[in-house]
Amino acid sequence: MNTDETITLDPWNDNNHLLTEEDVYKIYERVGFENPKKNIKINNLKFYQTAFVHASYVKKCIYESLNKDGNKNVELTDRPNGIIDLFDEHQDYENQEFLGDRVLDFSIAFYIYRKYPDTNQGFKTVLKTKLVKKHQLAKFAKFLDFPKHLIISNQVEEKTEDGRYNIRLLEDSMEAFICAIFLDQNSSKYYSKVAHDLKNVRLIGPGWAVANAFIENLIEKTVDFEEMLSKEENYKEQLLQFYQKEFKLTPEYVCISVRGPPNRRIFTQGVLDKSGNIIGQGVGKKKTEAEQNASLNALQYFGVLDKDGKTIPNKQ
Image 1 (spheres, rainbow, N blue to C red):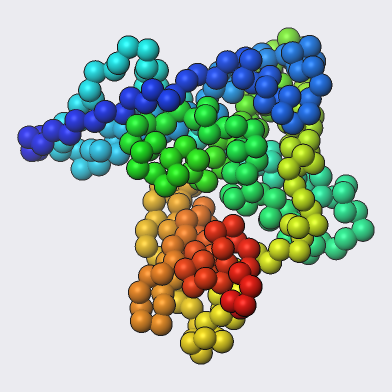
Image 2 (cartoon, helix red, strand yellow):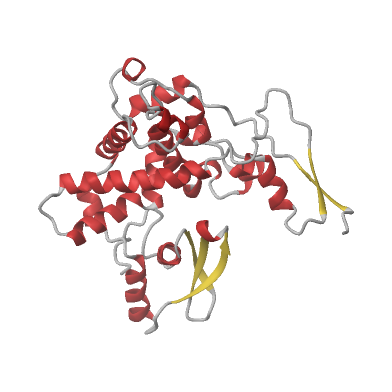
């Protein structure tokens, strides 16, 4: 094996900091919890801290991403004084993101079920899709000032689109933070020995109630339902109509890349113009989501929608 090539990396990021209990209480206050220091007990701060740790600041992930073929030496520059050290394997937010996604999904469905009891299933499904989409979760995260708490490598900070305001990073962190609430508020001295032996897998206690209240308060404070319900977000359909009107064609989508393990695929899809050039790209956890985002990107390219996804007058 040839190991002559050496890669030197400087991942250290002086914008990173570990979340404190004070930070967590401020987040609870932001969504309207009254006197959280008195009413909410933080049992395990590490759950909340982990919700902001990106894989780019995990030692093993760094080595594996730079040495996929196993024939390179990876060296890190010396860590400056006062800079947070890299985290060990499985200390990023990936596991919490997985569970938080499910808690969010159920909580939002429960909220819609109660808020709009007399609507049909199709209405509820469309609204839930809008509330859990990555752009909306990123908006929630920005409202809560999550960007300043993210722990990411220097490279991600500087080279990723929008840095620590990147939509994908904020979406993932939002899901992981909901999981942190769920797990932390399920940490209680009242649990049976069996529950303790199951480690973090506990389905008793106030974790669900607190997480659900947090999500509902967040929705009530940030979502304009009249605007959300009136906004057309089927970007594939909009692009299809635009192509048929302007070019008498149907948009063609291509796969640009598929990354990640089988249970966590990340798709990047592109949409072609009439000459076969990629004029829109989108990323998603499902191919259909990536194509929707690529369609949005294409509609913005053609000047049909603005950067916020709103229709530009006289462009349709």
